[in-house]
Image (cartoon, rainbow over all chains, first blue to last red; front, side, top):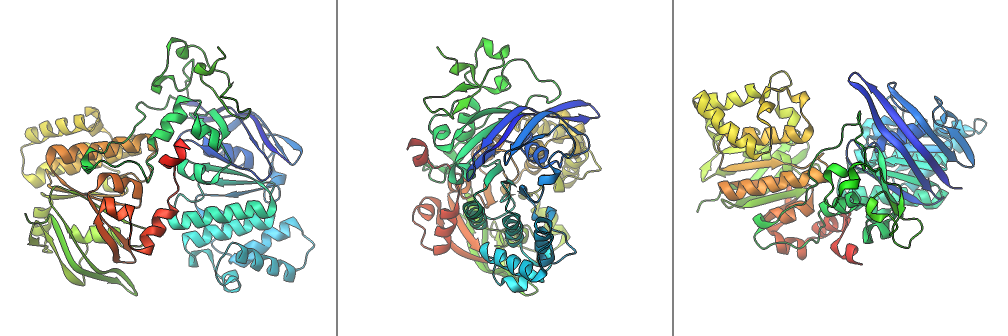
Length: 329
Length: 255
């Protein structure tokens, strides 16, 4: 069952006016697929997750958007549209695992709670056994002891494993992971990503990985969507996008990544780093034309007036980008 | 030439944990030195010890050949040649005072006339790409990238010969982190500063440092010239760190 998000637009009302955080964002994730949603700060990537989960702040308003999850459609402009899916059809892993864990309950209580919500009639013994099994599956050492521990007794990586175990127990159709490894060390990051992937393999859910790290996406994801200033500029398979970026912003983002095997100048002080100059446009007043126009290195006159459609890139049907240079010639 | 910083057998315990467990290293003047390692490896504790903000249980630290002395006068004197840029720039800026107040402190410490100090500040701000008006702002009115530049401007205003940067790019977007690194590279070249970069970002340290050490649980696991350290690491832990690095590899782009 595919997950699809259509034409999502979200406004935030601020004291200085209305910020249009997302404008017409659409995403498609197939069952068992890992989609990486990349964007820099202010691109609105977390707003996508919060709009899907129905966790937006009070000053946010969804002005358009429909989500189709497990064959059912949800009108996201309605408050609490997806409430029925939270903890059943959808699960979320936050950057800070403490946002998902209650500090005053033991790990065991919180895991059993997930099961109780799914199957209110089951008995306690089965739940405890299932919870322990889940902790074991996410490779948390000594699951029986962990069940009686409180979140503060665990390290950051261990807490994130507990949250993944919770997601595992709720068997969601869609798992949203919002910067799940940003606060963790590289070796722990690799372990957590492996656990997310094995969870996906085990229950066959769709995964939306929200991150600012292209490295993480190219290493672990199947598909990639690039968000910039609230608009989706490109999407396609990781392989195709990396091989032939359709949008200049995507190309520039890849150029800014520092590969671990980049050629190194013998005189270290000669090594330079790539930068995307300029600033994000004001989210309250979208300039006409292409949203990336002001910072683009290959823009031309029309880019300032025409807002580009989504054009196909190369021969791959699933690869498209919003750049006027891709107009069929 | 004497080393900018030399540390021999630094030991420090916080209760049960050994934060520094026999660390020895030497940082030659005018070079960039990288300290990499995961959280809890002792990178930041080592920096604090070098700045004289943290006393060692045992061992010796020499800065430009002179042993580190813990006294207020020595701390103040040291500030004129060794300067930190802390991990969280916002934490080194007082939320209640304008940036101008912070900069004026530098003049007080250096006993430099106000006008002369502000003339130097104007040049530094311009070089860091900060608008002159930034000094009249409060820390909450500027962006994270700007706050980091302000912290660098303050450090440079002290005319240090050694600059220690703790995670200089943490929390910055890839599109702006390059800007900051290029800036550090420029400063190094024009002012022949000794730069110490503490980071968990192996790819960056590999490119800007001449020498580096890998730390784990308060120990130096491995160290040496960066090229060979990263190309053929001798220790299993260094290899593990490199293998875990997620990344857009050059080979990945071409294939």
